[in-house]
Length: 189
Image (cartoon, rainbow, N blue to C red; front, side, top):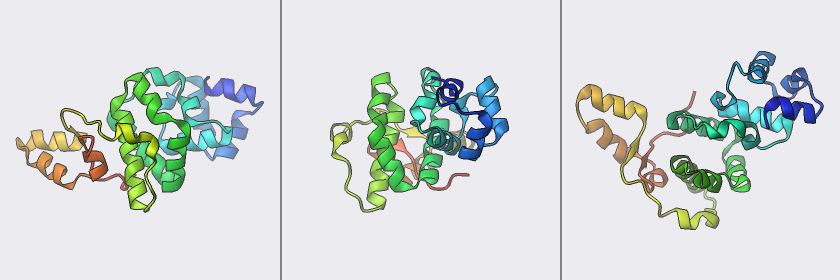
């Protein structure tokens, strides 16, 4: 279901959605006309629209979900969602939506394990017990490390593996468990 269908179903105008969501009318119009692909919106924009429409973010992304976005973009969107929602709401949203298992069913293992790592990291940071519904996934690990694009680029430019080694040392344990080398999830612009 696309955003136009949701608006029609809820008998809501784009202007009303803009006021409720605090997302500009221009952005909403561009999404509705297909000028902007909703999958390229920030996590914050997706969250605001989903909340105003009283639907899950996945409902907004449903049509675009077949076209997988770049992993780096996905990671940025997740970090923006954490920043927008706050740690506890983010954890509740992920667990309630069953998004991790949904990604696994599609074969989107990077996204699934990144999201699981984020949930586990936020639980540890906030001294909250980890959700045991993912216990069978915690042992999954990528064969090769997945580094941030910036780390790969720096390694190439310097013709050295030192940036990768440093990144590995600084990686957050919950991410490193899955061989996702992620050192910073809070510093998003």
